[in-house]
Image (cartoon, rainbow over all chains, first blue to last red; front, side):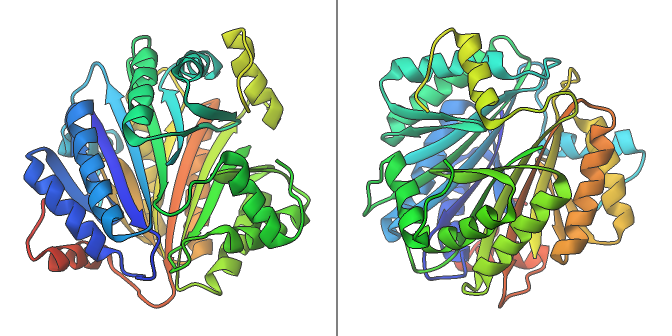
Length: 101
Length: 101
Length: 101
Length: 101
């Protein structure tokens, strides 16, 4: 399955890059396939592996912040096993053109 | 923590009430505090308990559908432990009026 | 169409009830059908009417905060025109039982 | 402001690349800055310009599907005007390392 997730501390830092950097290190070290995008992080893997990593990220951020909002969007397909690039390519093929990415 | 979540099978049934009914029965039987709302379900509890139930719901819906999108929004506050009603009341108190709910 | 939305200022107030109260007053005065729930607000109406109100809410909150995250989830069905209660009832009917709401 | 959005028809096609291709063409032709990612599209611009394009995408997909779910996440910062790359770089700088992207 593929997951898009984001972590947002409710805090007085209007820059969120510090807490996100902390989470990304955890994801990077997990060995799971991931991609950092401008408004969230994509992870590929099995439910338990992904959720274990997201929980670790969430707890690392919450240690330093009183309140944390974490959002997870799971796209789980029984029949297809897409890579990150496949998903984008499938759209470009249908459109018959390339898009900015 | 409080969680808002929704499960959506990609399927030819434009009515989603069947799969959602299946998920709600699982939540109801879990013993966790929950609320069914028109566009999602709220659950209160600890991370592991909530995620165990959501995984069970996701898998029950995926058994009958090739592709399932599940979305989870976690609001985790270290210092406050709100009930569902408290959250709504806090907004009404700040506003000095009552709202439709 | 039916819309679930939430507004979240990135700020040092870990209580979000103040900004949400401000937004709810705007929604209440708009005359559109709405429901305040513990993790967001539901609105029913046409695209332009709903988006006009959400923009007004977003701007009212942003006036007092440097950074604001607003999330909108639109459920738009050509063939059905559900009320808030219909959606919940449809799930209960499929399940053959009542749920907490 | 920066917006992450996704359009999902409730349909019997478990492949969503067709409807997404249609939407991406509209975004590409709008002239707004955008990025196609594996689980959504990012757009930069002003509220009215972005919402006009998203409405057009939503309506184009709904023409061919009875029911469509569109999700919009707005990140609006008064003081900073990030590019897509800036956001990712800010995280990498805080982490002192590079991530997959």
